[in-house]
Image 1 (cartoon, rainbow, N blue to C red):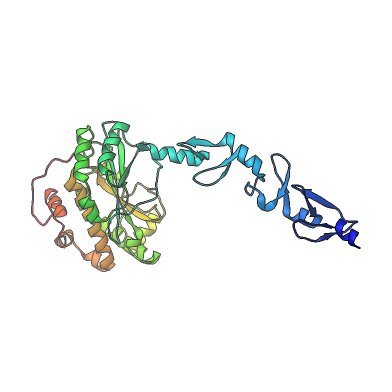
Image 2 (cartoon, rainbow, N blue to C red; image 1 turned 90 degrees about the vertical axis):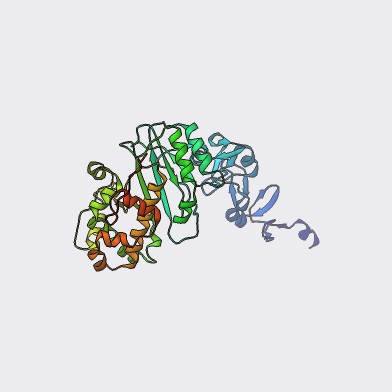
Length: 369
């Protein structure tokens, strides 16, 4: 009996006794019963060696032993994808898959591709945030110029990034991360604009440049239904006061129709919104609704004049306030003069006077740039 115990075989994995007439396998020199072998081992796709399933260094598509993984494979430092060493891209001591490598390289560029869209960084303490896209033209899609602008805007934090834009002749697009209105007013816009002018860029004094302002949808209401009601109010206001907004925008009718067309008047904001949802204008609408997180006011001609930029932000803010706090009936009855009487923002009042849009008060227009 003692001799039989000494010669008995036990599975190294589950401890079960392996009978004399039962088959078994060896894994890394250890005896394994057939049940454990079939259910808890696998084969390395590269060298064919048998390994424990839990010891695989591969992924759901590739099984690898430790030796093959260490000598022939790596993982993307960004998304953790398994990569054969021949397929890995190397940058600053890190390994990347092709897609993540392109993203990392793009981050290092001064001027990104048009489709570049980083994770937004919010600045300021507010429920409502404004993202600005400012096109400037005439001095080149030039990395050195972009670096000079970025050194001003991003000296403390990443406030803006720069993209190329096919609609420009020889320029770039400055894009801010979302900022509250007060943060925009304190931001180094004046210094940044002076630098752009000194480099030879222009914005108003071109036929190509626009100023686009994004507003976060969740600042317009807590639910989708509330947001759509307010957006309908905004669209109704824009249609009712199209002539005044065209004058405010500094665009020609031709330019407005091309880059920021109106949806067309209907009796209610809901009807205008329904028309907008059909998407016939694409994103080239006065109020673009094609972004899921923001609405985009595209009416304004580009500018490198500080007061004009702030006035556009203040106008958008005033329109949003009006749309939230008033009924559709109130908005339909409201005249332009009654609307501007409610405005207290000094930059906007000055601009309205310059454009002869402020209750019979006129102020000399300083040349826009």
